[in-house]
Length: 439
Image (cartoon, rainbow, N blue to C red; front, side, top):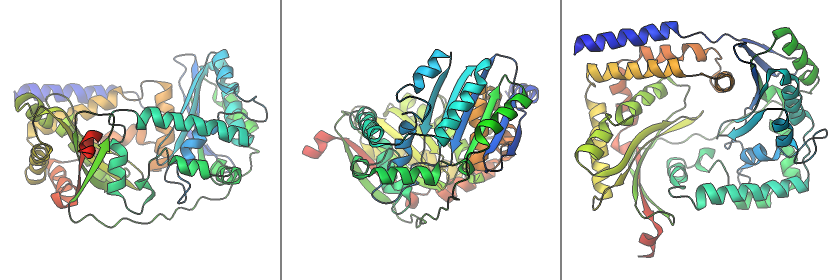
């Protein structure tokens, strides 16, 4: 078996050695816009994307959800793009586009046939320089966000999972509130509030522009200067969010969900921001515990003991603090207390014992394989380049992040689990059907 494991390891290392380095060029415009170019002429497509360093945490009390709201609002139109025509222009020119918002950043992108690079750059410069922000657009997108909240969270089974964790793990940091915000805050916001938010965060010096795919570098640089070079620099964003006190005693909470019949048990820990080395170690621990049917939690609680319909562990990475979550849904009469006890037993093993050399090698192989398969499209590469620069401060992580995982040891896995995943550091949430509240 050792011989086979050794051969498998050599196979993955060989694959990683053959994996193509993602080459890129980066520079700054005078207005502070960071530009990253990744040229790949293997297919006639090009992605233009802009990531803004603004997310759900960037708000004041009583004005939550603005970053997610702007994700929608900035598709309304510009001085040169008629209201409601954004998606029509993209599709009519053979492209596709989307956007998404987290607690830490907002990301927009378009992918076009490569002969439409200029169109993609023009549209993103329009979004930055000439957005039309008026009461009609605010009212329209307010209703869009409300409908999204109803569909994805209020009326979706287990749609409150993340909210239940956030509101119990955080007391003072903005991560305590949902990224989508509270609808009463959006209803209370004035047009002046919205305009002020745009002026504060949507500026070239708070953004990174990525062009990835089939283009000529000199042509792209010239277009970028033409479309983005004259956009004025904005105020520097200063963040000084309150720090959370460590959790030193287990917190118990209950959350009710009208959309479920089967309860769930959630165990959550506050962990370090994703830039910290310990966060990478926690990612490995979650893979060890719950990635696939041969993982420790699944094999034990689902396959062997028939206690759980589903079980999992994952580290939800965020810039300031992350959230490590272990959860399970019971089978039959299995109590939530039993689920918590069984999950804790596996977490305790990671805290108190070195994982086996064989399991450790499997983890390393999994990370190597994921690295080989990552960034398989220009869209994915554009996203990774933007994220690594904006949130990690190291664009080249796209090539070197695997080295962090390679350097992690079994001893370090045990030390990090002991440091962050103690019983006295956790929140235990009984996630129950609404009928249980009625009783």
